[in-house]
Length: 263
Image 1 (cartoon, rainbow, N blue to C red):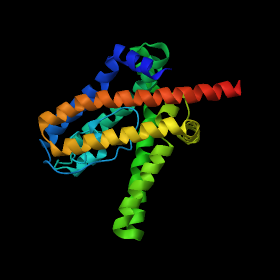
Image 2: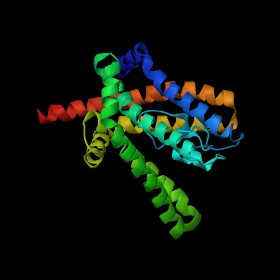
Image 3: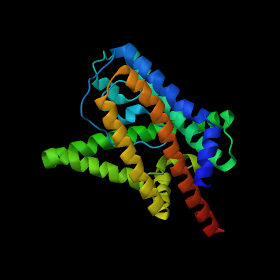
């Protein structure tokens, strides 16, 4: 998979950009319906710890999009209906994750997007991504709480660094679950191997991803308005899909080298 060739093929299958846009617009619409427009301009940023299917909620510290548990931290009435909406969007996101990741791989390999394959891999992996989301959520909570208890204020910073390091080491975890058809424990080990195998190009791409995502997060919070959130949804879906394709290209090379070494 050549990178520039893959980027070209990605634009030829532009529907892949549409999925995160429609998903975020739906999450935004439901968030506005449930709580109205929440938040105000501020100087803030958020480190992304999610890979694969992009969402503006990954770079926002203000609860607004109803597709994450932390939506309940906003000024919203916690009702059964609200819970159903948030859980439903989380499940939809988990379904889209599998189809999105495999579509990136298929576009890079064959130059073609397939809606049938998208649905197939979405159905095949959504439960694993729900479980992974639960694990990551409780890992964040427990690790942060533990370190804050023992190290006070600095504990929160140490927890953030620890989570960031784990995210980078296992940067290909979601991709490995889908492409290698592995359960989470085995995918953890194999994704770490892929990271080590492609250390330099992956590290460079990680640095670029965080520079871009942190910059966009700061801009989002500084120009916080309904219209700008929509603008950011459009732009973020585009730029992060390009970055995910870069990761997919690097991973595909690492997987090919591994298969050749075993041949």
